[in-house]
Amino acid sequence: MKAEPLLLCGTDEVFLIDTATAEKGTIEKLWSWKAKDREDMPEALRKTFATTDDCKPVNDGSRVLISSSSGGCALVERASGKVLWYARVPNAHSLELLPHERVVVASSVNAQGNKFLLFDLARPDQPLWETPAHSPHGVVWDAERRRLWTLSFDELRCYELKDWESDHPSLALEKSYPLPDEDGHDLQHVPGSADLTVTASHHVYLFDREKREFRSHPVLGDQPEVKCVSTHPTTGRAIYLPAVGGKQWWSDRISFLSPEGGVQFPGERLYKARWLAGGAKE
Image (cartoon, rainbow, N blue to C red; front, side, top):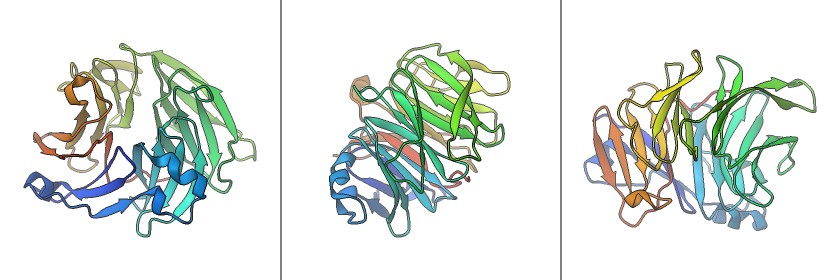
């Protein structure tokens, strides 16, 4: 199997492995990042990364966006681990880099959450705009269509950029699509296609951005409690994390499709896995 790097997160650590060696039984952390070790982040914010829940590579993998349900968000330089931007967001569950160095964050269930927030990388911890949503969990920038897709408890939304060249940008709702199942969880591109992968409580779907319709995932359609699905942009190999016992928030195993396989991580509590190759460009 060809060596392919994969980012993983779940507790207070974001780390990188080589899937080829991992499938052969050797799990080595090639890169690791913990907020508690970063003196370039405000001390009060370091403890808000106790439960990391997304780790998205951007700019061809040279930088990584990190969010945590404990309330922290960051953009880090992968080579050095340097913190380039940070923010405190209640129950942050995912985030995405947008044009002009802006970031959108899904703030999930919390007395001060249940909304999407917009930030500028030049202004740490200062939201520019926000809009309410029920249990937001996913955000994906669609560069081809110039649209932002967001996932919440029972709907997939499509937004347009508004006043983006100004100092007061916002997002304008174009349309909302009810989910076929409740508790929307993970939202990701399927590279080289019009599809988005959408995971929910009991099923996994594909959403066609051209036809604007859902269909069952051909392999994972009836798989419950899938925490994430990530498809490699070159090989097309998919990775997914089903919750342990279908009940826990975490998994200690990553599973592969095309070809099938898997890696067990004794003692780890994993939540998201993202292929490092082809990190999103601005």
